[in-house]
Amino acid sequence: MSAFPPASAFTSASSEALHLAVALDGAGWHPAAWREPGARPGELFTARYWADAVAEAEAGLLDFVTFEDALALQSSSADGPDGRTDQVRGRLDAVLTAARVAPLTRHIGLVPAVTATHTEPFHISKAIATLDHVSRGRAGLRIQVSQLAHETRHFGRRAVPLPDAESYEEAADHIEVIRRLWDSWDDDAEIRDVATGRFVDRDKLHYIDFEGRHFSVRGPSITPRPPQGQPVVTAASAAGALGDGSAAYGLIARSTDVGYVAVRDADGARAAVAEIRQARESAGLAAQPLHLFADLTVFLDEDAPAADARRSRLDALAGAPYSSDTAIFTGTSAQLADLLQDWRTAGLSGFRLRPGVIARDLPAITRGLVPELQRRGVFRRAYEADTLRGLLGLERPGGRYAAHPVA
Image (cartoon, rainbow, N blue to C red; front, top):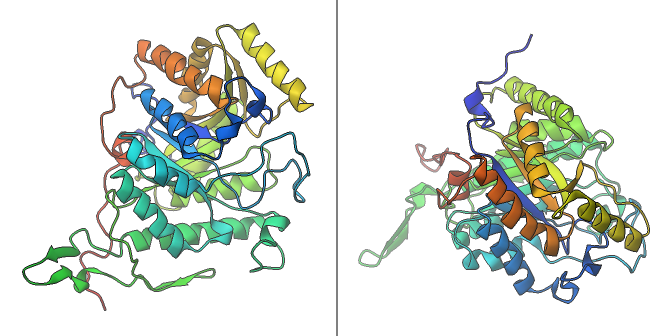
C-alpha cells in the first residue's frame, strides 16, 4: 500500500474552487472550425484575432490560456505534410503571440507551448522571463517533445528522432536548465543607482554550471529574474499515444507545476492522478503542490441536439468524424458543469478546455459554463491575484543561488 501526498499538495478537494484554462489553436480544435460562421479565417494570423480570443477568456475569469505551437505544419499524417488544402495550415509563434497580447490583458495567465526537443533552454528561459516581465507576472510555459522524423529534418541536429524515454529525459533537463537560469539573478541584483554609477551587483549574478547528458550550460541568464521568480511550468500527456503515458507522467511529476492529462472518463482521470502522485512521491516531491488538469474538447450549445447537430455538420465538412486524444463533450453548459464536478472527485484541480470552434465554444465557456459554475459556488467571481502563480495558489519561490556568492 503506497502513501499518497497530503491533500494540500494536490489542490483538488471539492471544497476548493475549480480552476479553468482554455487551449487556443487556430480557429478551434475541429479541423473544419475555420469554416464555421464567425470563425474569422482571414484574421488567424493577426494580432487582433488572438487579442480578442484572450480578452474573451479573461472576461470569463479563466486562470490562463495556452497557445498551441509546433515545428512543422499541421498534418493528419505522422510522416510529414499531408498535402491537404481544406484545413488550417500554419501558426504564429506561440511565445511571440503571448508577448503581443500581454499588455492588452491584466489578470489572465499566458502559457505558450515550446518544443524542448529542438530548442535551446537558454533561449527559452529568457523568452519566458521576458514574457513574465511584459505581463507583470502572468507567464507560463508548456513544454512538449517531438518524435516526428520530418520535424527532426528541419533542424539537422540529429539523424533520427530520440527514443520516447530519452525525449522526456531531455525535456526534464531542458526544464531544469530553464529553472536554474531564472534563478541565476537574485531578486535584488539590479541596483540602478545613477549617483554611484552601479546598475547591477555582479555578486548577485550566478553561474548555474549545468552539466547533463543533453545540455551543458554555464549561465548566468542575460535577463533579470522574472517577477514570479519561477514562471509556471506545465506539460501534457496524450491518451493512447504509444509509450507516451508513463514517460509524460514522469515528466509532469518531476518537473512541472501543472500537468494536463488526456483521459476518457473519471476512472481514467483517477488512474492518471494516482500514477502521477506515485511518481512524484518516488521523486521526493510529494509535499510540493502540483495541479492536475484534465484536457477536454467541447462543443456547447443551448441544448444537446443542437450541439450534436453542429458537430455533425462540421464532421461532414471535414469528411470524417472528429476524433481526439482525449474525451469529447457535446452538450449544454449545465451538462458540462455536471461532468466537471464529477471528474474533479478523481483528484483533479482543474480542466483545460479545448473549444471545438473558438468563435462559438469559447463564448459558450465564458458566458454559459462560467456563470453556471459560479451559481454552484465552485468558480471565482473575480480575479483574486495579479500573477499566474497567485491564481493557482502557488507561492513565489526564492532564488536557489541567493545565499551563495558567484564563484
